[in-house]
Image 1 (cartoon, rainbow, N blue to C red):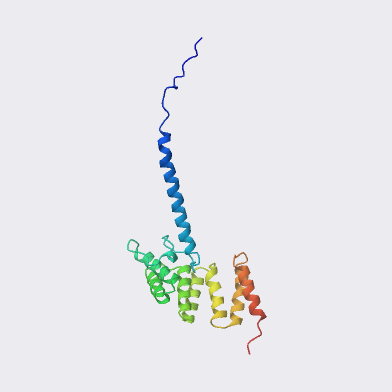
Image 2: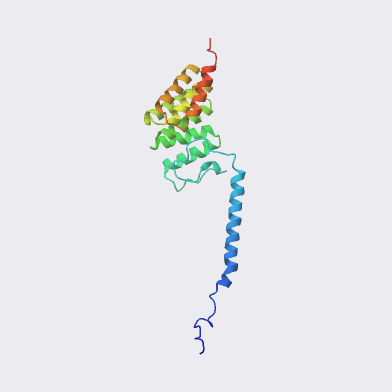
Length: 198
């Protein structure tokens, strides 16, 4: 008895064989792209942002070598983006100008006030830095960074160890679950180990 014919026996296979080189090319392109990205990021790994990330949702400004194009942003977010870029490149006076502009345009929160305070601090305007940190705390009493920066400014710049220790203790009371507790405890114990000033 003859065996029934396989109806698919004479049909050609789909063109998957012809797709193999294309798929291989795509995989290789992805691998090269991933390798280039890794190499670029590795070369920039020493550069980290020193403040809370960009408030505009744009590309992280620390990786840009030229100021960001803010022409498509509203004036307030544009001023913040330029402030962040200048901050990340240690252009303190320019950062101050842009943050102040953002505040005048209605973007006024504890993060911007803290970054503005830091820019004042790093440009040797400690009293203005303290003022900005205090405003940040008024705007958001749960804002850890402004209190941390206030304490470190008293310890490192103003050399007022008593006030710094008082602020570290306040931080421990107000933020008992903070990720910064080890740093705060270490800073406080270092201050307490110092002999009192005459």
